[in-house]
Length: 493
Image (cartoon, rainbow, N blue to C red; front, side, top):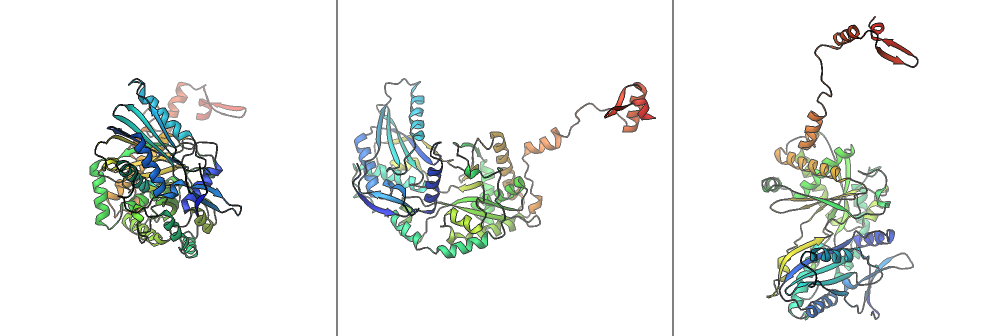
C-alpha cells in the first residue's frame, strides 16, 4: 500500500521515449521488458532474499517510480514514500524432472507477458522458483525504463550482498542517487546541443530506411534474434587493427554498418541510431549509480567512394567524438532539429558493460550460480538492431522484427556485415568504392549459380542455328504478332 510520495522527478531522455512507446502501443507485447533468470545452487532463505529486494527499493528510490503525465503534458516520475516489493514463490519440486523445464519456461514467459502499468509502481517483479532441495531459479522482471545494462549488474551484486546481511545495507557504500544525474541533465546546455545537432544533420532531406514506410508508427512485435560469433583469430585481428590505427572497436562497427547500409539503401549519405552510455564521468558515484542512463542518438556517415577505409573510419571517429558532449538530448528533440521526423529504422549497440553473473554471489559463501540467462537483450521496436559484444570471440546479435524481415534476409545481412569487417581488416587502404559487401554464399549465387546455362546449348552462332531449325521444321510457326504469324521458312526468306 502506498502512502504519499517521496519525490517528483523529471525523466531522462530515453525514459521519455519508452514512456511514449508504452502509451502508444498498450495492447501488444511490451518489448522493453528485461528479465534475468539465475539458477542458484545451495540453501536459499526466501525470507532473506525478499528482504534484500525490499532493501534495494529503499537504497534506490527511483526503482519505485511510477510514470504519469501532468495536465501540462509534461511526463514525470513519482517516487512513493513506501512501496511493497512484488514477490512470488513457485514450488516445482513435485513436478517430474522431464516436465520441470517446460513448467519453469511457462513461469518466465508468463512474467514477461504480463504488462506493467506505468502508473502503478514498482515496475519490477521478483519470482523465486524452487526446483529441488538445493536448487532454485530466481527471476527478475523489470521494465527497461528503470535501468540499463550496467545498472542491472550493480543491482544484482547489491541484492546478494544484502541477502548476506539479511537486508542491512550498513556495510555497503552509500548509494549515489539517480536524482543527482537528473539534476545534472537539467543544467546541461540544451540550446547549444540543439544547435550542434542541427549542424551535424544539416542537408538531410529524408530518413534512411531499410523498410518502406514509417515503421515507428506500426505496433511493435516481439523481436527475434540471430547470433553469430566470429572466430577468435578474426576477432583478434579486428581488435589489433583498431588499436594500431588509434580507433575504437565501436568505430569499426559503425563504419562497417554505414558502408553496408549505403549498399542496402543505395545511398551515399546514411543515418542510423546508436546507443550511448550517457554516464557523465564528472558526476560523483556515476559508476555505481542505478537508473536509465543510455540514450539513442543518430550516427550520420557520408560515403565517398574515393576515400580510403582508414580515412573514413578516422573521420567517423572524429565526428562522433565532437558530439560526445551533446548526446544527452532526447531523440525526439534531435529529430525536431533535423525537421524531417523519423531519421532511421536501424540501430547499433556496442555492449561494453560487464554482466558477470558469477560475481553476483561473491559475498555469499553457501550459494553459487549454476546458469544464467538474460531475456530481452535484443529488445527493440526498430525493424533491425545490430548488437556487438566484445570478447575474445566477437559476438554479433541481429534483433529483427519478424513482421518486417524474414530470417533468411537477416542472416544474409549478417554475412554481408562480416564481409565488410573482413575487408576493413585485410586492407584499410582500400577505397570505399572497392569494398566488397557480398558474402561468399552471395558471390557463389550471383557469379555461378545464376549465371550458368539454363538449358543445354548447341555449338554455332545464332544465324547458323536458325538455318538448321528452318531446314528441319520449315512449316513450324517461328513468330506471332497479333493476328499474323510466319513460319521458319517464311522468316528465313
